[in-house]
Length: 317
Ligand code: TXA
Ligand code: MG
Image (cartoon, rainbow, N blue to C red; front, side, top):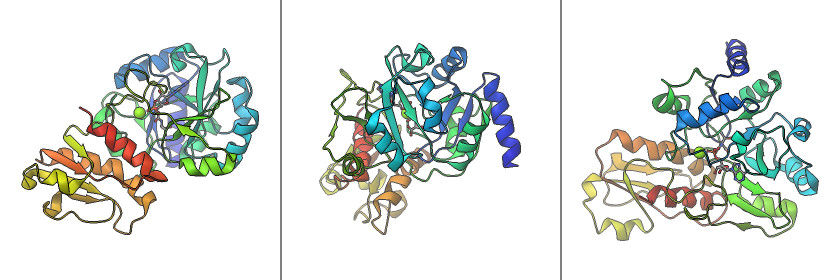
């Protein structure tokens, strides 16, 4: 069955069609990265602004040389430690990457996803896959095939179901195109792990709507479609009617909020488990009649930083 689905996905992609693919981070909406018409369709389906560049996905670094102008020692160290996995590398691009993919930038984002189905698919096809997260622009990224179906099912040719995503947060993006190292998006690989492999301190860029360095990192993103307050839950609870309130917390229940409205992301206080549960928790409120979500501030370390980043963006109107 899996093989049949893989063969079908490969054929659709070869003929310029879109296929949603599972990765360890979130589901992607994939097209042949060398085919500008197919890539244009990604922007159309997601209603994504054309200024926001896409990541290209490859099976291994052996295939990267055609698309980037050299990898360099920092890439080699990080690749050996973390790829395949939830890390995306920004590097100077070659002419083989269409401008449509990079939104006219001279750099390209490369990722080597770690999901068995998608790794096999990337080995079977003859081209890289351009793939953003498989959600409508500005909304929460999908971590199950059903999430993709709910938003995009009627618009795309196929969803390759690879089960729930294990990491549950988008990849961490590191800019290797300049001397100064910068993380452009906190994500599924903790900044501390990258720093320990490279032996240097790295700054995480604070992007804003007016000057986004990773153009997709606008301050308002990840909208759950319901008002969200991020911060001290007990203080915020004093301001509102608890009966129509939901909560997102790390490992503790929140006194005063009805039990069915509470989402405790990891009762055993495991940050990886919390990260993997975050996006499903955000989506789960759309089927309820609550007016506001109170989200706790997570410990500002490791994946907790990426969780806070997503909650902060989800709280911007
Ligand atoms: O985990 C992930 O990275 C998922 C899976 C599907 O691989 N993909 C994903 O793609 O999150 P997307 O398009 O939702 O987010 C990609 C981010 C955007 O914020 C975009 O602006 C940034 O990567 N980006 C892409 N190319 C870039 C470039 N050349 N320079 C700076 N930022 C870039
Ligand atoms: Mg996205």
